[in-house]
Length: 274
Image (cartoon, rainbow, N blue to C red; front, top):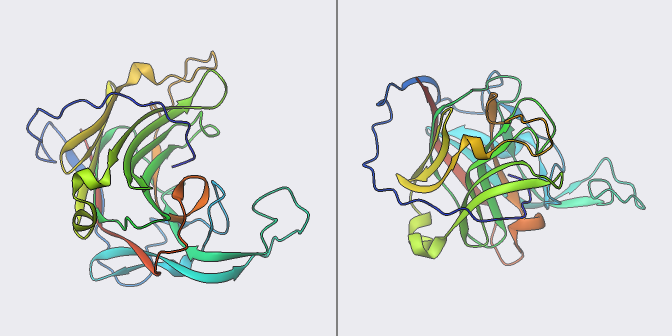
């Protein structure tokens, strides 16, 4: 879920009846139901810390993510957090901010769990108010971004629900297949009060991204080779997943009129493979 220069793929119509999650030869191989109370399981999740990406406003810390009543809660708060790496005259945005005005959490399975191909499913609820940038996404385990590949199964900001796939373009920057869905076309505030199901079907031929069984983006694997002469495809390697709730930054918008705290809630995430 990094700052993209978008080029839009033509979203294909979802004319096929949605499959049962365990159909088509798929069997569940990993699941996180978040049924324990307290911090996410350390054997399954790592925390990102501090300022991380996209010049976002929040300071990531462990305190803002916990499990409660069968859901993962990631909570963004409007509160000051001192930056221990502060250097007044630094040109690095991670160091020239004396403090953060917001805190939040980002958790990932990097180094713990990764998967090559499969059906990935998440049931969650997102906040769509101004300045809020929740995401569920994956990164390849090898290579530097964007050559390692990125899949944004769920990303939201500025009234847009997005489904993105990124790889290394010919200009040595990220090339994107991205689709956007205006949130008002889905139901706006009423839609956001409910839980929804996001899904990725990923195999050796295609990556397809859905919300509530509506196809948002589908790209053939042979279109996703890195354009650096190596002919490597970053989506033919295992990926790990991330959940985060970002504030502001390059894409998130202006949160100044949004009342905090803000939550991204996840009921479950499950992985099926053939």
